[in-house]
Image (cartoon, rainbow, N blue to C red):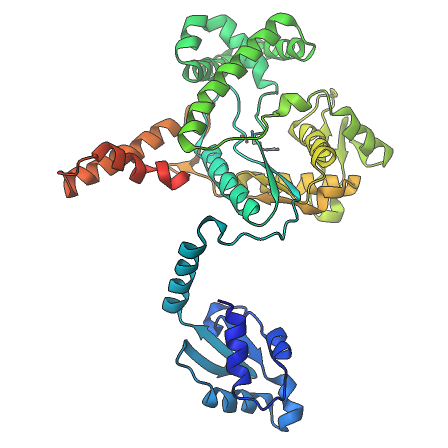
Amino acid sequence: MDYKAQVTNSILSVLNDELSSAEVYEKLEKPKSLSMGDLAFPAFSLAKVFHKAPNQIATDLVAKIDQTSYEKVEAKGAYINFFLDKGKFSSQVLTNIIEEGSTYGQNDNGKGGNVPIDMSSPNIAKPISMGHLRSTVIGNSIAKLLVKNGYHPIKDNHLGDWGTQFGKLIVAYKKWGNEADVKKDPINNLVKYYVKFHKEDKEHPELDDEARETFKKLEDGNKEELELWKWFRRVSLESFNKIYDKLGVTFDTYNGEAFYNDKMDEGIQILKDKGLLVESRGAQVVNLDKYKLNPALILKSDGATLYITRDIATAIYRDRTYKPAMNLYVVGSEQTYYFKQLKAVLLEMGLPSAENLHHIPFGLITVNGKKLSTRSGRIILLDEVLDDAINLAKKQIEAKNPDLANKDEVAKEVGWCDYFR
Ligand code: ARG
């Protein structure tokens, strides 16, 4: 049902050919606030024909309009505001959905355009967090909406699999870890080593130097460090995949930060060539005054790269590989400022798809008002949350419908399973 057409007919029924159907249809507006209705017709254009003030015209016409198929129709200033009958509207929408089934809403507006969605993107050797869960399910839903709208989404799990923390983890594993424990329960044990590192390095700051050297070895491709890193990455992914399987979410690519580690030179070169990279206290930054943002730190004073340096490489890669119609990043709102900076840097670089970069933020989950942090051990394990949801549903069933035959199955569906699919 085209509600604009319905409203157009209502207006036409109280006019005498002063405006054509197409003219009325085009003039209909969506009011700024729902309190002013769902569709509004401005009466200004009729002032000349009727030789009356638009306010008066609106009032006169409303008196003549048959309101039976609306919740109400009212004149407000020069506008005629139409309030759709929500009950009828909902029942119409639901009937359409049932009739059209999986084709409901399908359209070709996206013309097959590629849309990489940076989603989930957990960090290796750490448990997948509530934030990563939200990114996973929001990203997955957006992918489905995009398909409906004729786009081609590319679900891209940008794993946090590179950075100085792996130097720390390798040092910690070598000092306090063992293979059997990691094999038995990879993530929990790797987190244990990492947390211990941060406790110990307060009293033994030399551990930090050791970690820095170890990360350097990893960057240089030293065999022992590289093997350990690959192993940590593999076991982490295996454990993440168990959760993705539960949620029924799949990805098109898992190119994490490490994948872009050898692809950063090009971005840095473009920044240099365009004269955008300037020195600030030994470090290399891009000035973003024009965007009212703080400068973006691209290279540290020792030449080390950062999260943003890898994200610049990622954006160039996606731009070239997919020629994206849109570039979406489903990442928690604590990174909103960061994504503003990233977009600004890419705009300055002249990257074609920078204009269509959109950060899709979501709220931060805290525990007792504090941010979750692996380092401090303040974490909520996603697996436990999912199991809790099922157990809570089971309790409700026991209390309200204890004779139900397939309790476990229903608890799982009610708890979360079908909810996320
Ligand atoms: N791994 C990051 C985190 O857990 C999220 C990565 C988001 N994606 C990106 N391209 N920066 O905070």
